Image (cartoon, rainbow, N blue to C red; front, side):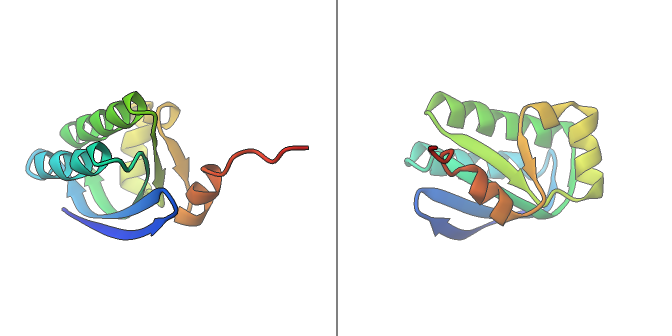
Amino acid sequence: MQLHPREIDGDIMVLAVDGGLDGTTSAGFTDDVLSIVDGGVKRLILDCSGLTAVTSVGIGALLRLHARAARLGGDVKLAGVQALPMQVLRLMRLDAVFELYDTVDRARLAFRPPAED
């Protein structure tokens, strides 16, 4: 599994996740992403279009990231989750925890404040 910072759009960081998120990769993922959050980036979009698989250990890593960001006043959105990882997220009912978007652009728009009338 590889994690690539793709872009920073204002105070939103987009990270591309490639490969599987499992017992062998989740510790590195957790360390890398939590250090970004602890460094002050609180609004993250994980581009999961390259995520090929996720196990229960990987789910735990995602939940730790979500909890840390929320505790610091931030948020994590998942974009582009493909078929197999999406099935796992839905089976574990994590689609109620994470906001899931088809694309990074849709996730980015979700961070915008609501329009005032």
